[in-house]
Amino acid sequence: MNINATLLGQTVAFILFVWFCMKFVWPPLMNAIEERQKRIADGLADADRAVKDLELAQAKATDQLKDAKATANEIIESANKRKAQIVDEAKAEADAERAKIIAQGQAEIEAERNRVKEDLRKQVAVLAIAGAEKILERSIDEAAHSDIVNKLVAEL
Amino acid sequence: MAATGEALTPQGYIQHHLTNLSVGEGFWTWHIDSLFFSVGLGVLFLWLFHSVGKKATTGVPGKLQCFVEMIVEFVDNSVKETFHGRNPVIAPLALTIFVWVFMMNFMDMVPVDWIPELAMAAGIPYMKVVPTTDLNITFSMAIGVFLLIIYYSIKVKGVSGFVKELTMQPFNHWAMIPVNFLLETVTLIAKPISLALRLFGNLYAGELIFILIALMYGANWALSTLGVTLQLGWLIFHILVITLQAFIFMMLTIVYLSMAHEDH
Image (tube, each protein chain N blue to C red):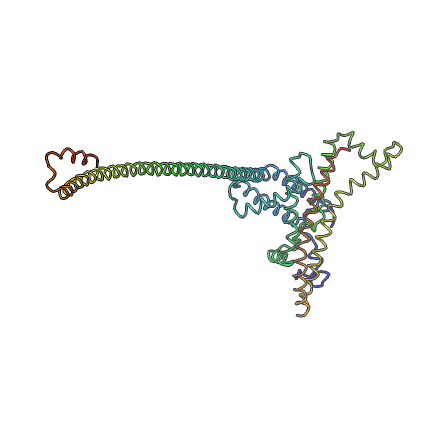
C-alpha cells in the first residue's frame, strides 16, 4: 500500500504510452475513420444526386410522352379530318356521277319517247289514212290528197 | 493457495493475495508484478491498436478494425463533447487511459488463484495480478494527468494567469489571497488524489471481495456452491464496475484538462 519507486516507473511508462499512442496509434486510426466518413458522405451525396437525376429523367420522359401523345392526337385528328374530306369528296363525286347518269337516262328516255312518239304519229297517220280510206272508199284520190294527209301527219 | 506457512489461515491467504512481488528497500521498492502487468497490458494495447492502425483500410473494415474504430470513435466523441478547444494530446491521452485502465481492471476477471498459483509453481512467492489495486499505479497516472493540468493551465493562461486563478478566486480581493490560495490549492490537489483513490478504492475493494468469496471454497461443499454462485454474480457485476471506472477516469481527465484550458 505504501508509495514507492513503482510510482516513478509507472509514470514513465504512462508518459511513454501516451506519447506512443499520440504519435503512432491515434493518427492512422483517425485518418482511416475520417477518410471513410468522407467516402461515405461522398457516396451518399452521389446517391442523392443520382436520385435527383432519375427524377429529372423521369420528368423529361413524362414530358416527352405527353408530347408524343399530343402529336399522335394531332395526327389522328388530321387523319380523321382528311377521312371526312375524302368521304365528302367521294360523296360529291358520286352525287355528280349520279346526276350525270340520271340526266343521261332521262335524255335517253326522252329520245326513246320522241322516237316512240314519232312511230306512233306515223302509225296514227297510217291508221288515219287507212280509216279515211275506208270511210271515203274510192272518193278519195290518193295522189290528189296525199299532201293533205301529209300535212295532217306533220301536225300530229 | 498454500504459500508456505502463512497462507494456511484465511488471514494468511488474504495477506498473501494482497502482497506485491517487490524488490528494493524503503522508497526504492519496485513492485515487479504491478509494473509487469501494467506495462505488459499497455504494450499489448499499443501493439494491437498500432497494428490495426497500420493496416487500417478506408474501405470496408475488418471486424477487428471495426472494434478498434468503435473504441476510438467512442473516446473521440467523449472528448469532443467535453473539450471544445484544439489539443492533439487529449484524445490520445483519453484513449490510452480508457483502454489501458480497462485492461488493467480486466485482470480482476481472471480467477484470483490462477496466476498466483502459476507463479508459485514457477517459484515466484508473491503475485498481485491487478495493477490498479496498487496505489502506485493509479497515483502515477493521476500524477501524469495532474502535470498535464498544470502544464496546460500555464500554457493557456500564462504564469500570471495561473497564479491569479490560484489566488484571486473565489473572493476577488487582495486581503483574501491566503484564503483563496488555500481553497484553490486544495481544489487543485484534490483532482489527482480523487482520481487515483477512486480507481484504487473500487478495484481494491472488488479484488478483496473476490478473494473473500474464494475463501469459501476451502470449506464444505454447501459453502463452495454458494461461493461459485457469489463469484459469478460478483464477476458479472464487476464487468460493469471495471468499465465504469475506466470510463470515469477518462472522463474526469478530459474534464480536468478542459477546465485547465478555460480562461476565466
